[in-house]
Length: 383
Image 1 (spheres, one colour):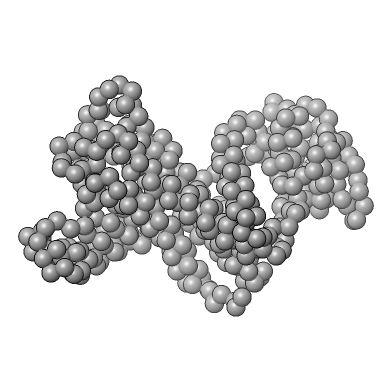
Image 2 (image 1 turned 30 degrees about the horizontal axis):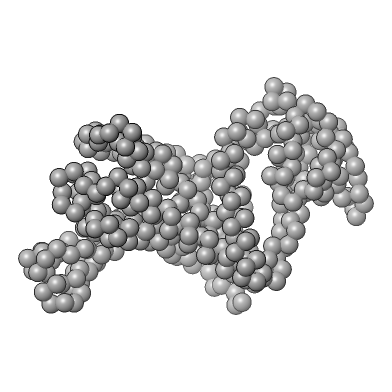
């Protein structure tokens, strides 16, 4: 492939295209699901207001009519109601606004739809992201295969069990208790399951196999900011020829399942101490941009689109899963209210539900501000 002509400005543009492309996929899911069950969509927007430009379908003239800013043609001028498709000034995010989101009296509105229809509409955005991710990852694995990864020690903390066992930075990990180490998570899982007991590690050092016995520390013995063995891990991967389509789909599915598993096991791993809090910190817009910059560089170095396509797929998975979390203001939080309604047999007062989601939105914006602060002062990618 030709080198990507990206400097900082080019990276920013590429990142915004990627992010807004995934937002478009998410909102398209909500939009098509709404249309499929007869819920009228008042606006489909990319970016956040103020509005720059938009278009509506004129039923009277049977053609698209464009407008600027807030000069939206009235239903009377259009010959009937029409969905507004708009491009807004702030180029991060987007939204679909169905009619009557919190008004159970609105005709063809979201609140008047059946519970099944509402769950379908609310979940469709994330489902579209997950399906899109699967397709992208399948394409990525059709482009290249991932060779067996190399897991090595990037750091050995002085005074740690790893140092006492004779482990050295640069050692390549081969197996733990006879089980091959194919990823950092393989080692972490075995260490977590055997804290306080000796484990046998096989490492390669200067093309020689070395066998050591190490005892991972119990949580009560582990100094703050360190892991059970007191090591830093590094995982590198080489790219090979792409798989055929059936194998590519299998690898794409396996990678998504692994991402689901990593997310589901994260709270337990934090409690057990097999992962440090700073390693599990959430990443905001700035952090995602930092990762994107590194991946664009990797795309240039490897002369393959695989790293970039894989990153887009994984971000799409993360976007889909995050929106399904049962938190106020997120799709998962709204689905939770529908499920509560189904259990109790009557709807929660729309005004109260709206206040809960408003409060949730304020808290999420505050959390995003905090995450962005840490992304700036303590970048996830150290340069």
